[in-house]
Length: 148
Image 1 (cartoon, rainbow, N blue to C red):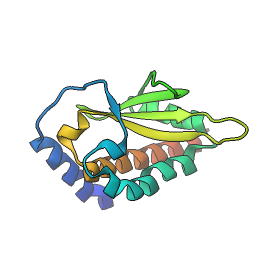
Image 2: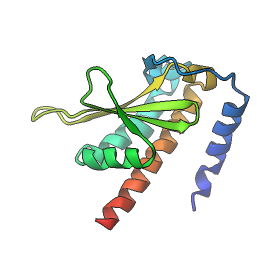
Image 3: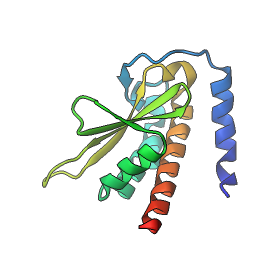
């Protein structure tokens, strides 16, 4: 039972439902390029990026498999070894990007957004939405690991 996240889901869906619809642009942006991104970045970094790296940096294959189970498809994003596009809402793609690192640097996991997200959400909603995606990826990956 995840009733603890119900208010967040309601908040996001309400904003989504009253937003001006915009088609994907194909232009990727970072969290900081969303309105309010600088203000919310520390929270976003702790609740999304660091959590993804802590959970998956030693198990990138599980992250990829989990993202694909959630409907993700592999795409090409310049400067990254792996990129998976996941629609977290019908008009909202998120790009999970991975730099596999090397013997000197650990893997780097990041999220990019289609610039159209700015028509739907500010950084606050985007942070919550990304956190929900992170929670789902982690929960599903743990379920998968139990089955192995």
